[in-house]
Length: 293
Ligand SMILES: *[C@@H]1O[C@H](CO)[C@@H](O)[C@H](O)[C@H]1NC(C)=O
Ligand SMILES: *[C@@H]1O[C@H](CO)[C@@H](O)[C@H](O)[C@H]1NC(C)=O
Ligand SMILES: *[C@@H]1O[C@H](CO)[C@@H](O)[C@H](O)[C@H]1NC(C)=O
Ligand SMILES: *[C@@H]1O[C@H](CO)[C@@H](O)[C@H](O)[C@H]1NC(C)=O
Ligand SMILES: *[C@@H]1O[C@H](CO)[C@@H](O)[C@H](O)[C@H]1NC(C)=O
Image (cartoon, rainbow, N blue to C red; front, side, top):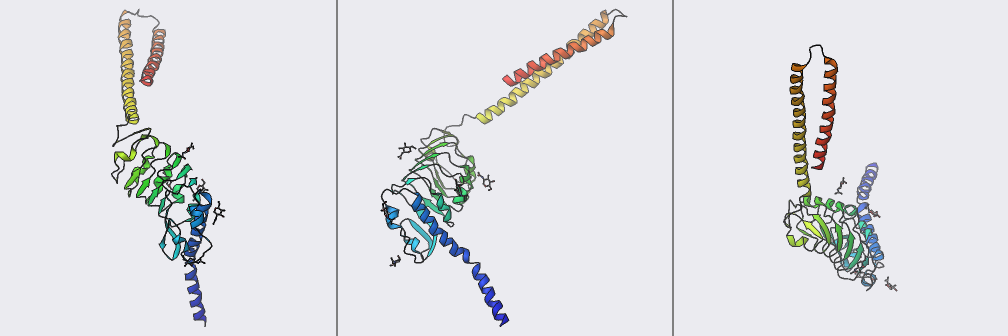
């Protein structure tokens, strides 16, 4: 009896470790409910086709635009809601679809910004398409933390600012498009994929390898600073050497002409004072030359 009880208890413990899976599907139902609530759906597509009253297992998987891992399990793999005239902001409730790998909201009228914590919302996203909407603001740096990304389409929106250079490190990226936005600055260097120039076309002022060369702000200024430092250093050194030689020679000439018992101390003190004063003057000049350069 005791052995049998222990056995049953162990089976229960093992089963309970599987509970998060069924919790997962419960949150997936919440996920789709929150998407339907948060998006403005003028044509009532979601409103009429997403029926949450029929609770049979896998009922979500028959919803328009919803694909599950298994047709009889409410665990959402992909959501594809394209060209439905949807309005509103990015549906952050989608973070409750914890097993989501694909999201396509392209060809709608969505607006607002892409959430800053997008990699927390879509940690496993492989294909992500927000193209042909009305998204504005910057491309969040955190999107580069979605390390499974294969396809990222952000083209035809109103995105501004720079493209985070971290995207270059995404090692699975195959498609990356930001055509027709308002982006500027250098584009990432993709180390694992070949992204054509067309993917960046028609923005405000992008530059980089595939496009026009960047103004080279960073490299030029660095070269400039080094050159200025070198020039400043040389000027400074030559001034000091010059002063030193000048006083040396003057000292030698004066010593020759000096009266033997003349107040040498006073003179030598005045000499060092002069050296110090001109040292300072030339130091300041040298520094100004350095900073102006
Ligand atoms: C769909 O939307 C219409 C109007 O907005 C509303 O009257 C109707 O109750 C909604 N249907 C569902 C199933 O939510
Ligand atoms: C619930 O959905 C299943 C699968 O789509 C369908 O076979 C069944 O008839 C539906 N039940 C009701 C009450 O709508
Ligand atoms: C992401 O940020 C939004 C607010 O911008 C917040 O509501 C949401 O809970 C955050 N999600 C995660 C997974 O951190
Ligand atoms: C995009 O949003 C701007 C304001 O944010 C609005 O003026 C414009 O009409 C929108 N465009 C579309 C196609 O919805
Ligand atoms: C990516 O995530 C790590 C750890 O959560 C964080 O330290 C880092 O700042 C994130 N990178 C970006 C580009 O957001």
